[in-house]
Length: 259
Image (cartoon, rainbow, N blue to C red; front, side, top):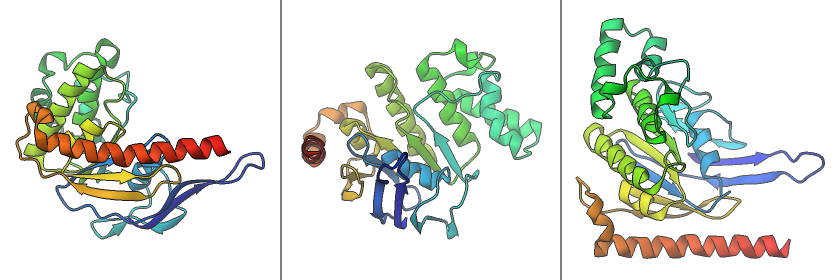
């Protein structure tokens, strides 16, 4: 991201909204970067710009040497809301991108089967989204994105609507997939523990208008087990990031009161 900003025009004579200040960020191949920040700081805006779902006001985004101008199969997106196609089965949802790319049916069947095994939904391949729990739906959404073999996986608070126990299991599933696949990942969250547990780097954003405040390396060993969340090293990182985020929340609250 080279000097990327986003300003939304104001409605009904209101002042424009500066969602994202000019931002520079480099993400390396196979990096797992979590983007952490208070509500309304521009995290999702940043991710939508990378996805090509929105265009920057200034600057440009380059992926593997090519400017991003629109959505493409080189970027897989998973949202917080369950965005499966309700008229398709689990297997057909996973196969959707492959079908759009013209992948032959035998190869589609093989890839879908592999992902059904990896996400633990083999016995649910013929179920429809309405027959699945939230966690099952997000597993399917992640598999649908990865089955298409994107260069980068973009996740916008994908576990935010799940209960704590399911959320923890989904974190472990995603981390296991990343440790095997080593895809490049950008993951938006407001949960500090989640950001640390998943990431190789945590990028901290300021309150709106958002900009990058800190870029923290997470030097915790792999493979990562959930018990690392109680380790001294994890606690030190959590304390540091808690202070970084708290300072931004206090500033935002002070600004709101003043206005």
